[in-house]
Image (cartoon, rainbow, N blue to C red; front, side, top):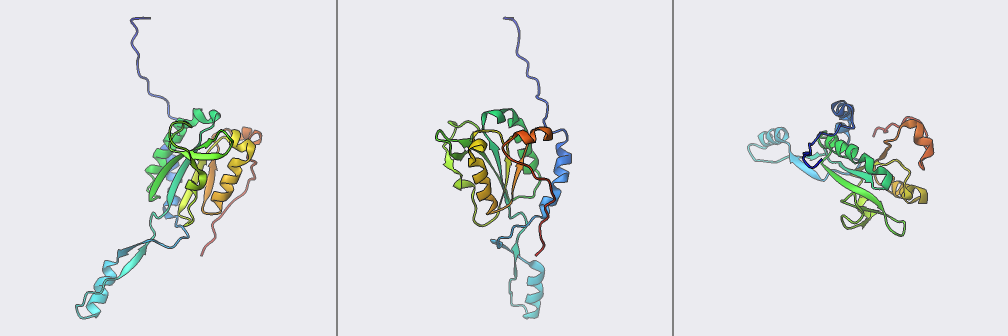
Length: 203
């Protein structure tokens, strides 16, 4: 109809209850990396006490700061079958961004190069931004937490490149895969599932 006018309609949210999810993720606020703290802050109470004992000579006392020392890298598998999950990815970014558990949040997209290698960029389109080696995801300090959103069915999973990337990242820090497909479809993917409970050891 030539006289018709386009009308914008808000898209329905993918996450049914983002606030509930954010509350469930709050224990991450207590997460501390195993790496040595890089920053220090002035301990005002200890400084005042030591200064008083020293007869007025100011002796500053510093303490290590570990709060929010971890960095989250949120990675979306950019294979063709994952395009429908871009909105879910955007909503997850908002949830984790508002959680306050991480010092920073980096968003990356995992691509398959023409020769089948795994590469990352800042764009969901392979030609939308420069491609870099997945070495960019690795952090030897152990401060990065990686969450990969993937249906585990794309070319990188069939070739094993995705598995190798995850294995390498898991050697440096916590890694998790968020599978958006219904659980009944998981056996059809290229990432085999073993059910269990994982607990972080103390000390």
